[in-house]
Structure formats: C-alpha cells, structure tokens
Image 1 (cartoon, one colour):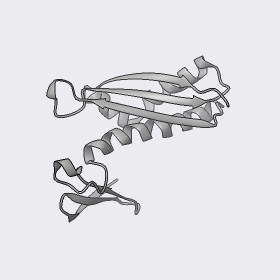
Image 2 (cartoon, one colour):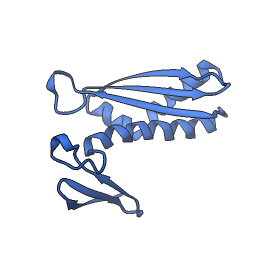
Image 3 (cartoon, helix red, strand yellow):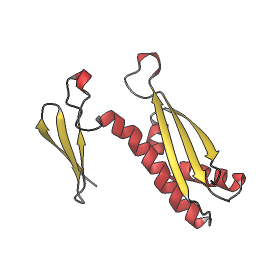
Image 4 (cartoon, one colour):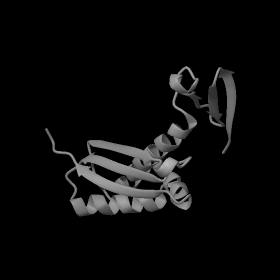
Length: 137
C-alpha cells in the first residue's frame, strides 16, 4: 500500500494511491487555503466513518443482516486545545428488520475489525458509539 501527495497550488495537493484513485486536499479559506477539498485531518475522520460503514456491511452480510439504509456519522472533538482528536462519537443509522441485539453484535464485531478504528484506539482516542434504528416510511 502506498500514497503519494503532489502539491498543485497554494495549500492544495492531490493524494493518489497505488490503485489509481485520488483525493484533493486543501485548507479552508479562513486558514489560507482555497477550500478545494477536505483537510488531511478531516480525511482521518472521514476514513473512520467510511471504514465502519464498509466493515459493518461485510459483517452484516456474514450475519445475514439485510438493510436498506446504512449511514455512519463520526464527530471528532479536540478537548483542551489538543492538536488532534481526543474523542470521537460514532453514530450508526440503519434501516433493518434485524433485532437490536443482532445489529449491536454486528457493530461490536465491526469495531474489533475496523483498521482505522483500531488506529484511533491505539492513539488513545476515546470513542463512543450509538445505534439509531430508522423506521421504514
């Protein structure tokens, strides 16, 4: 696995992986950038959200949990002026007929397997989780 970042202009850069995908990063206008993309720090939080969503999907298939909606919000906090995240709240929203217990078990397994979450945990970031079961319209 490899990532390469190439400066493009101002504070903007393009990050590529070794599989041909790319992401533009930049700073907000208020911090000297042109707001052409998320910041690298924001990408960390976005990666956590995406990882939980992906791994939950994989685990749910193995557990035969069907769903029509799956959304994961991550909210990061930097307490006491910390330079990085000190706390992250993960909220999973799902529309499924599966029992609350089965969905919770799936999330617990997901959290053990999510490599981005493991990195956050190893870095000492306090993470809390919440599941919201959506009602079918």
